Length: 326
Image 1 (cartoon, rainbow, N blue to C red):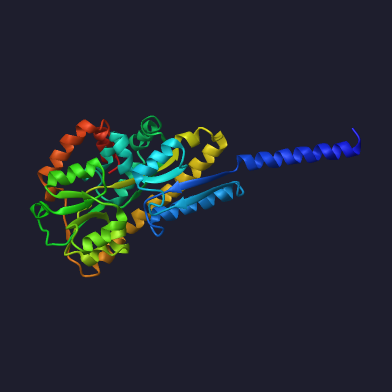
Image 2 (cartoon, rainbow, N blue to C red):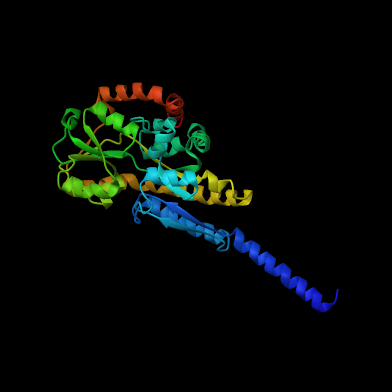
């Protein structure tokens, strides 16, 4: 082969290699319901930055916070079809497709936010992710979370009877719906962006919320009582569309798994460090805060347990796992 042919062949090979690189580059889309300032959204952005850095910019992630791609049910449908690549969704929405996940919302499964973090790291919890490709059309990479749940009420609430009949905003999923039905409240599903105005104008009488948003979104400004109940943990799960996953190489899967799990763990660590601090900041505003425990909710605890021991095959195993890491 003469010199000219050698250079021509080299040029062809270089062009092919470049073309292959471009073809393999992926621009992923990741959706969430939380606002940009929320910890979940921040971790999603950091995951995208890390993936871009690890692949020298070949793979990028565009994050769509604040329900830009729809509510969680709609985003889960998009994941199933491959129209959406990734999402950080509440386990609440996942439990609508895989009822076993409702066990995570067992009242007082976690004794505090640190205990909630340890529960999510048990073999039982991680093993539940294995059922998601078949039941929901997604691959579960790992868990994040928000803090424990509290109750913010417009009126004076000193007993569970004071909650009866109150329109109480909830995240729309069965485990929390069943809990507040058992309490005797009137659970009212409502998207997060509508909550502040609804509480301010009396459209709802109370809300079920985590400490971060009670503090950051100033829900306490329209409260007469804040029940520091810590009655439920609130996990999040990092998901990849199963359709997208099947087209990824083993190396790509490994990189995405490693980097997303790192951000999910960082999310958990942040809540463990900050949840109590946020509650103390709310307390510092002078609002009426009452600490209550399981006895406050009385028979509602037993009623929820009876209902969900039939709906979730993992409730008993998860309670045992939780006890083991208490």
